[in-house]
Length: 495
Image (cartoon, rainbow, N blue to C red):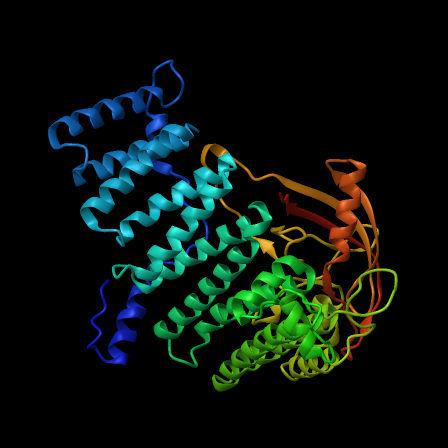
């Protein structure tokens, strides 16, 4: 839908709201047409072979009649490509998808939104083959199309950008390490673009903006955690975002202050990374404050209470991922208690009690550890996951999505469909964890590991040490230590 810039703001919002009729889907299509065509073949050959051969013959006839770049070939090419993808014939499908792109660009222009489904299929194909450089370039092109095309309505854009973010998180883990900063910065840009679209789609205080604001806050959190947990990638982020670069060391330099150190070492100076970490965490907290303002404006008391819990989590994450000096066992970060986060938790509990929830109901949701950051936004207590216990009475936790491994502690990855029933390589394990009152892992034991190798078990233990939990809470908002938390973890194997 092309927006006329001369329209009034209210009329524009009305048009945009109408466009949201297109549901914002996160998952990809499973190519039902290709499967149906394959099932229709009753020959004794490989399923779908006859149908594919017939489609190829028909395509050749059309090419002879209309030429190789006629727009009438787009639909036959799309249908045949779906059949090839459904049959797992990735090379043949790639050729057909690229031919579609050529015809669309020649006839419809470089910015045409008709390229988007083709590019998404190409990304799935490259991921299935493990061709991360090609996947990276295609995701970048996909985001570029979304930012420049005029014939995509707001609903379609939000859906497409959500899928692009999922691919970027996958690339962060699987692409080469020198591309991590690029993927994180693009992830932030896409999240901010989605938040901007939501502000155009809804009024400023409309609660439907809250999920998009939350995802934007998670992008700032991702940058902050990377700066602290991954120094090399963090330096690249700081250099790009803040323009702080070091310069060659000379014997004539005299170092008498922190400013002198920062001029020489740039983003490598710990004071620079600490300051940048605090800045991104402040943005994260500020966005959640904006969400609280929207909930208060609409007088949604339960949403205010739940968002106060998220505000406490933001404070806890900042405290526990700050660098800690000295020599000690365990993670070199954070402090030994909840700190000021406890005031938010107490406030949230008081607000929930005022709404009629008793302590038993509160402890049924918050009396066990929760992995941070929370993957989803829950504005109602009954939407928040309940505590789970094993038959032996031990607390247990099983995140629904695969985690991103060591690149971004606690972040999960949305499930993605791949052609030919392909799957991503996952590493998994079952742990018994002790969670301290500050939410850090104070001890972990690998019960099972897949694959079960000594080196893999060591990697899993290091991975678990970097995770941060909201500890089990008491009715007064204070924390209690948890022992023998059983946690089943899957995470995407990295390069």
